[in-house]
Picture 1 (cartoon, helix red, strand yellow):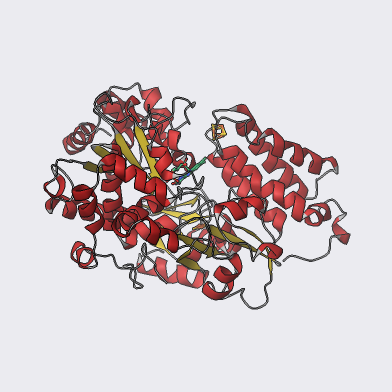
Picture 2 (tube, rainbow over the protein chains, first blue to last red):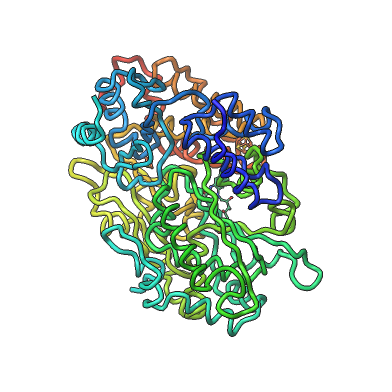
Length: 157
Length: 427
Ligand SMILES: Cc1cc2nc3c(=O)[nH]c(=O)nc-3n(C[C@H](O)[C@H](O)[C@H](O)COP(=O)(O)O)c2cc1C
Ligand code: SF4
Ligand code: FES
């Protein structure tokens, strides 16, 4: 895996917005993750070089954030909120249903590479708990029956 | 009842367009500001209004601005940063403002930047707020096209470049100095203070960090005046507040109400009361990092001073309810797991103390608790309390724990009894 020229251009464009290119670290990681799905060691090294940082420095940032993946993930990541209001209103029932339906535990990816199941902290929609994100889309007031509908629509097994 | 911040927000969830915003008197506050007031006048007005920061700490906004160097000798580059991280469990008020009426925020940003004479502003937005990011990006482009942002705003000599930064998800980034490190592309550990960001903040330049809701108050204060603003409130603390309720109520949500509305009114009238079969046992009045209060506190006005006197904090004003069928010890464990996971790991008491707290609570719940564990938990509340850690994350984490130990002691002690006598109070 190497950076495409589009990615390099996008990173350099972001870097120009700041006094130091390294300030665009998150932007750069986001740009690359959007097309590659996750940040491999090789990609991390290339990005670090572009931003004038050491790979270790960039890695300490990449590993710090919940939404930067340093391991391969499925095409769509299911982030289910397990913070307090969702926990109270059924997040664990949803988690169990997802695990059974997709045949994966938390942290795993389905065999067809479609879904990865991960917890996430409060998604800022506690009035519509339980909440989860599938890819870029947030779903509110989710229960197992709704999950079946949602996954049906997005073409799950 | 006046609801300046949410008056344009639509119930169908769609956003307010620039045309709609202008038609409702939008950007009038900015026009008036640029035409009639000098930057220091704006600072004075905001000081006089009594506006306090809505990010959780309640620091007076005008006073905060007044520490920024002004005048000829001040650094040429200054920054205004919008704190839109909103990652504290239970908080969902800024999302409403960001998605519902992005131009109101932009107008507030320009006014604040003008008041401190900053020419670059950043919105630091949590990465999961995809819809808010898209709407804000669109609104910024519209504002630039209409001369409401950019060079010489509305024909004045004031220019402002506004940029959106979407974060990648970490609660500590909401702490204002960690936010600045994150924005600089550094690991988001908090910074030592002093120097305060007002003097040396982003890239070492004078910087103000303000919360989304704080900034959304500004257009209205500047347009309608200080007396009007004070009249919105029911108490000595001015303005309105966006209050929220989550938990087992009939209609959870967020509502803009006069500052000082009581929790009883918010829960019973706006959130529809508890769901059938559930009774209120306690509540965190201002989000995950505030102390529990009890039903006996429901008639206390929800403002900074009154909630403080009752032993908690107004925080974000978004409350989380504990009902009589949810175990308070398990609820606290859920909260402490959050804080332990989100600790930045910079200082020892927090890095080691939060996982220790979690393991004590887990042990208790799994029936491995010892009588001395409760005393250890109490000691941890002190060790991780104010003054003992590098930032306010750990003291905030201890607030629900210390108050639960005080108010729900019997629930903790229940776990120390043999399994057979614990009783099936909770499912
Ligand atoms: C751990 C932690 C997380 C915080 N998260 C936020 C946040 O998401 N949004 C926010 O506005 N303030 C947050 N704050 C408070 C900020 O440090 C700061 O006080 C606030 O942004 C100042 O804005 P204001 O004066 O307008 O309230 C947090 C504080 C701490 C200690
Ligand atoms: S209190 Fe916790 S979050 Fe704050 S600096 Fe220390 S380790 Fe980091
Ligand atoms: S607790 Fe799940 S969205 Fe806030």
